[in-house]
Length: 227
Image (cartoon, rainbow, N blue to C red; front, side):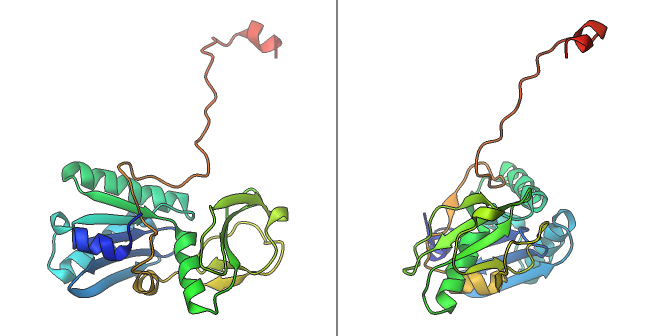
């Protein structure tokens, strides 16, 4: 998995897209120029496109000048992540370019670990239906695989959740909060291997969705009595 420094060296102009939280965030990173960031509370279907246009206009670049796209695959707002994934599939179809993904909780955990005395803790986010996304990080900064667990099975120890992430249920105990300002997070993690190349941008899921096969049976009064 490449680091941000490697991506900049290989692709120069990087467009960062993130709609995992209630704040849609877009950034332009270049190896020899200041980073540019836009942040908006607008939903991704509007905010992402407006912010991208503002950044390109401010930099004097066009979308065709972007060397690679970097996006958050989640966990977070499923609608926001999929809106960005849809846009990326369209842009890459118009002009093929590399796309890299990262996970929101891993990014937040890495910066929180660096900013505080190194210690183990867990970054969590609401996964709905009384379950939580769980991203542990060890004292040495090693990230364990992300999991989804019931609220009653949240790990012991320090729990923090990224700011501006939606929550639909009350946590079983108090959480701390860690930052999710991408301008600060990306500046702190240039050499961390958090990015993964992908040919099909999509939202992160813990397991592949399962679909029930339709039996193609014509409904009638006879079939209704057999239920």
